[in-house]
Length: 410
Image (cartoon, rainbow, N blue to C red):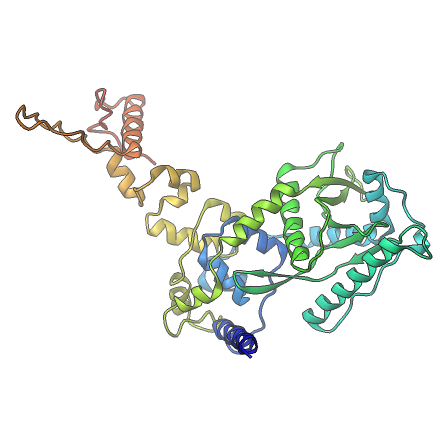
């Protein structure tokens, strides 16, 4: 009986949370699905409560940025989008036979007869139906691979565009990998199909890293379904400057551990919604000033890296500049400044004079004074060196005092 009441309470809490997130989006607005790219970007900045809340609520951040007057100027061109779809269609033709061939070329396994390759239909009504259909198809494919037909070698299966679920910050997120290959031993390999080329056997490290982190997100979702995927992802890309698919097996163990750790650090959605002022709403029909107030009421953790993957990055950067936040200079600089929480405080410290030494009293010898802030000492020395390079006459002594003249550090 107690367990039943706990289950009912949990269901009621989840229902109340869904209603609260729907109210934040605005009446009648469908949630924007959170894909693996957005989830990877969210995991890369787990301290940003603003993105965590807006993504969990399904708010369209691109439309929100337009209303706020700070639209993002990144995204994939229509030509690149069409080319990527055409390449994916070619790589997955014949029920994924090409994907299996590429995988076997790297693992040394014997490719199966294409006529015996299974490619189950994963269509179903709604995300929940697709998730359940994927779960059933995976179970059947693994059983087929492990037992085989009439005691012979196990059969292979390819699941194209399956749907899996991962709980992020207390809210469920539906994700759609490009493909999953189940081999003749029942092993599952995640397949990522990308449109950037592999030139002479190598590709851009930043793009490979981003694709591997996406695959790690899918790996965590499969773990939640009690399905253990291979530790390497099959990355399928165009070969050189052609449209022919080639592939590489990329170890994703490091990315898997990093994404798992970062997602655990995300604040739960219940805590974020409880901290909101009464009446907060991100309804795009609201006046821009009220919408900006709602957005700014949620703490953000801006960094220059946000400009490459978050629709609200330009709004957050403007807010950080207005607030003199040193985060605009990068996470590394912000960490080095320590207790200096504003750019003005850092500039004041750079041009401050060191405190005079306290006179010693023979009868009451002074104890060891607190050591000066290393960040302040480094800033004073940087200001002195800058003044010397620019010809200023405020050279400091050995104590590292800043120059009397010279402009502020930029």
